[in-house]
Image (cartoon, rainbow, N blue to C red; front, top):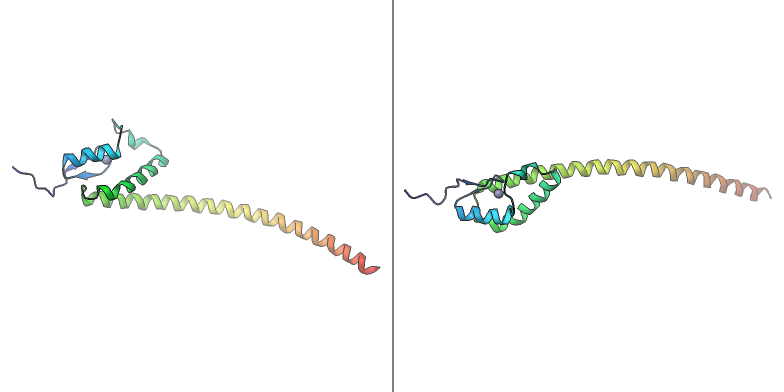
Length: 129
Ligand SMILES: [Zn+2]
């Protein structure tokens, strides 16, 4: 029995990638999971995960021919999730920054008001002469 060449039934142990040939999986393991001996990639922090996704993205173009469409769909989902997380982080950071700016503006406005008052007093004194 000869296996059909378009079948994608060889799965990577460390990520959802599927491959048509063992050789492709071996190449993928070398490129993507160098030094990995167990499934501990799933225990990584979000930070490491995002860098892993970036690495995956970088490798995507070179491995596109080897891999099945499943891999691209999975990658797109990962990218979408990562973008969402990044956007949330940016949103939180923006809120914090806006609060800081608001506080700083209040302080500056008070300083300007005090300075204006002082200037007005000086002007009044001058005009009285
Ligand atoms: Zn993998």
